[in-house]
Length: 349
Image (tube, rainbow, N blue to C red; front, side):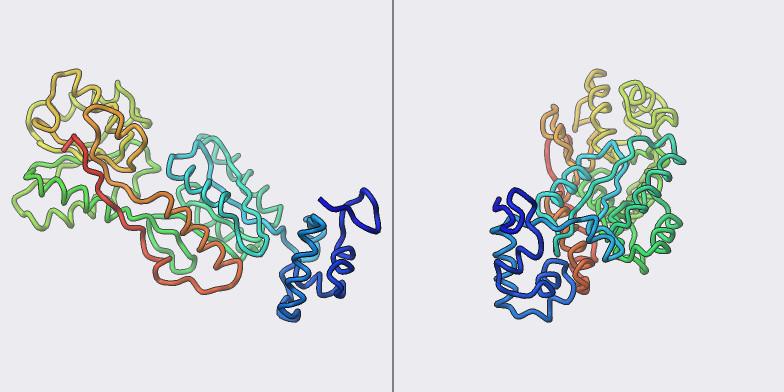
């Protein structure tokens, strides 16, 4: 990095950039602070950016935040532990970066069992006055969103399974996932289909929407039956013991159903283990379909048929939507519609 010509060994300043580019300090401020850049010619803008690059100029974040009234960061608030999908999406956002020099900053809170402290962490985030927020309605409430808005956070992107008219939302294809799972099983000739109802209350909203998608698919085959099968209520994170109890409670090995939509791959993995231990032939006696296409889905035997969507595209869409908020560009219809799911056909159906 080049050193400041006026302060050898010191940090380059905006004055140094102005001298190197041969322009006024005001023009440098317009270009590097992202406000009023329309007053600077394209030629001078290129000179300023080139000079800043040559000198290794880095804006003073605290001073900029004071002038603007907010920090030039876009806060990503996704309490852990992260799912595979969230982790991949956040990685893509960091890798691609954001417009106008805005920095994606990741905030986490690794407990679902202390809602008061999670709210405290969220309030501490807001005290930094971020330029925007990207967060999930699985983790915060609409009251939290309105509170952030009242503090002056204008750029808010939600991650959710339902559209919200007042806020741009990165939509997951939850209803379409349920539809595709049921459609595939009906195509395979199954007329008695079970669907796992998760024990985790956080998943209840997504479950109901997926169930609606399955019921929509079932309308094409009136003679087929769809059975809701609750997972053991104390087994919030599916385990082998919970799978064994589930099989016994619902008589899964007794031929009452011929196919099972497991809601997610996390339920399918321990179920497959217990069913194969019991000598159940899959998919001959019972077929299984999961969701999310987690890494182990292709590695277990039999390999799991699942429903997924392109996680890389999810991260890219998040970046495009955040950048539109930062720059003030309108969001297009392609950004606002849900992602498209796809069936990953393997050995369990």
